[in-house]
Length: 358
Image 1 (cartoon, rainbow, N blue to C red):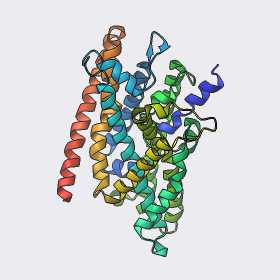
Image 2: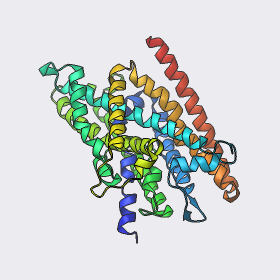
Image 3: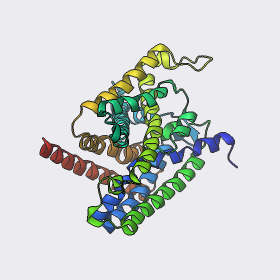
Image 4: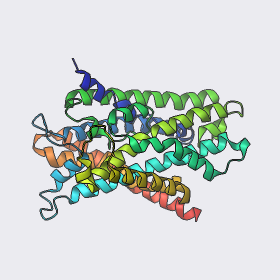
């Protein structure tokens, strides 16, 4: 029987697999056909596997010895670069920050677009919609605990491995229950997303006229209601990636300040200033960067594929080679090659589209 803390920790996994970008699935399914459905199932299995091996890298002989993605990277790179033992952790932190900050920025872009569309009758400028979305997100600066963050972010977007180590901390859950819950959650997400894509594509039958964002295909009567629900979903999805990025920055830059625990759980001023800078930076990126969706695809092809597919397999092979069977080594090697292929093809397509748009 799982303890209450273990159940609380494992219950956070639904935060990691649901998402607003499911709206693109019908469009992708129309243009990819049955291959798209197959890839959706395969990606769920692969992400579940790499998440499980990443969790296993936190443990040695059944004991929880590492706390974060950074700790895993430093343990792997310590022998490779003795003069700079923290180099691996620094590189992983940079990749995490890029991925999380771009995700936060994309949520701001989505929220701004939905607000702009919902308030089109009031002629509110896009900048005003961005500032209004930012106002709703200001309370994120004061979040100090993962539990309310996971409650707010029940509709979080990506199958992300960046939040697995914090969720898996020893006081919340052991290795086995976490992997059990992760498997069930990835499976449920795969089934629900597949059913959604099939329902929209086969029942609503817009065919080749299906828009890239499915709400653009809705009737004028239904579209405002759906946009309002999606706006709430986007705003509630923002806290988890923002909190994760802020925690990484605090632990990395403000090490002494990050260890200070005040009785009333308030943040020290340097930490609050750092979070405010991060939030404003996300807003500026959302306002200033042209062709942001393609830029997100470019960075995601590098950092997303690396953090989700490549690095978990590399770390697993490096830390547990002697304990792995030939089948496990082969699986890690195949997923590693798949991650490199996905990253290279994503970079090529994104750069090509960006150059065409200039």
